[in-house]
Length: 183
Image 1: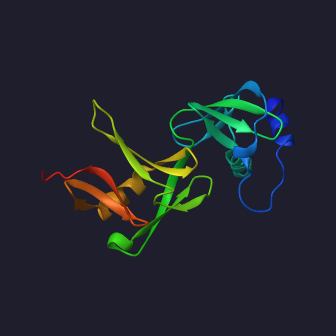
Image 2: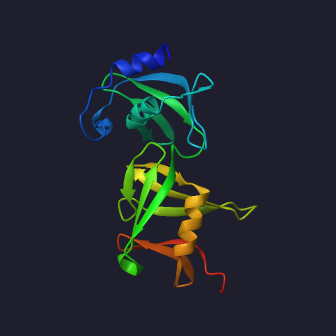
C-alpha cells in the first residue's frame, strides 16, 4: 500500500487497549481516497482487496461516520471512503441465558465483540419489492454490522412472539425481527 493510505497510517497513534478516540478528533477533511468496504465486509484499496487482517483492523479502528459519509480519521487528517452497505459484518453470535434474561453476543469480521442491548440495538430492514430482510446490529456510535445470513438464521431460531412480532431478547430489550406469520 502506498500513497495516501500510508500517509494516513503514519498519523494513527499507537494504543495498548481499546479503540482510538476518533470522536474527539476534528482535523480538516483532505478529500476522498480510493478505499471501499464491500457488502461482504471486504476492504479494498485502489480496487485490490486488503489481504492483511491486521491492516483492516487498524483502518476499522479509525473509521467514523459523519452524517451520511464514512471517513477514516487521525488527529491530523480525515479522508472519505466508500461503504457499500454497512462497514462491518456480524459473523458469529453466542447466546447466554434465555427468555428476557437472554444475552446475544456478536462478533464482527474485525473481531469486535459486543452484546446486543440498548447500546447495541438490532434492527431489520425489509426490501419493499422482494420482502427480503436485511438485519443489522450497531457496533459502536453510528456504525453498524450487517448480520450474516447464517447468524440471522440463528436469530430466527431464537425468536419468540410478542405483541404480534417475532423477535429476540438481549440485554433486557426485545428486538422485533419480523411480523408474526400467524397474524
